[in-house]
Length: 222
Length: 151
Image (cartoon, rainbow over all chains, first blue to last red; front, side, top):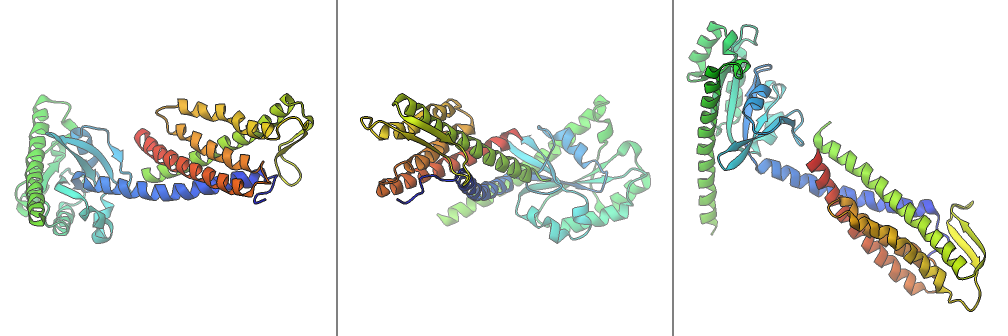
């Protein structure tokens, strides 16, 4: 006789739970790994900007799905965006992540399939000093050297002229936007379409470049 | 809390609860199977014990000699099958795979009813364990994908 005739019920259930938890840990590890791989492989557009610059509103206005918190990246919001036949994800990077310790917090971003970045400046009267915003933008651009950026000045409806002037001097070319009024006037609706076509232009250019690099790599490998 | 952590906790708690409920139900039905088939076979002094002082679960009976000894034993195994087969009706749900977990568990508890055949016990145990492992893997994989889709 190998097993006892009467086997305590709690032993049997305990054994089943132990098996279930062990297999669960193993399968969840694989599931998480695959999930991270999937999210990292999706073409991504980073949306950055100072606190209250309208990053979430921007994603809400342009995305083709609801804004959700990212399953892997803490504090990141994301939504999908249709670019012709392809789908990309708009990723909102929390402001605190690049104020200090960029390298520490944004290391994962480098592993992503980035196609472009959108930087939102808040040019309203009550916003963070424009010098600080410009400094942060430069640090981000330095950190993500190979990435193309689309620079937008948001809150043009309540803009501070001095801030716009300073921005022009430091950054050069940028596009103006007023997300708060996007839904209110037909004139501003055009603004949304313009920005959208800029994003699409930037993204498809970057996508084409990526495809070209991949094709070159594939032909070299073969 | 991150979405991935939510998926982890929901799926883990769900898996544990499903396992406990299906296996304890299978165990109860198994003992009830002994009981009813014992009555059917004309056995006397039938005693069904769900939890004794040593936390054991068993059914005792004195059966007439003309009855084959395996009738109430195998009967208990078969008695659980309709309950487990009902999970197969849940076609597109991950819980469908509880059938395999219940079946594997049913085999492992059924082989303890044949104490004199050591080889059969060992064989049955490994077959049952294999089916449980298969069921757990498929259940958990489908459950994780299902929760990810819903969340």
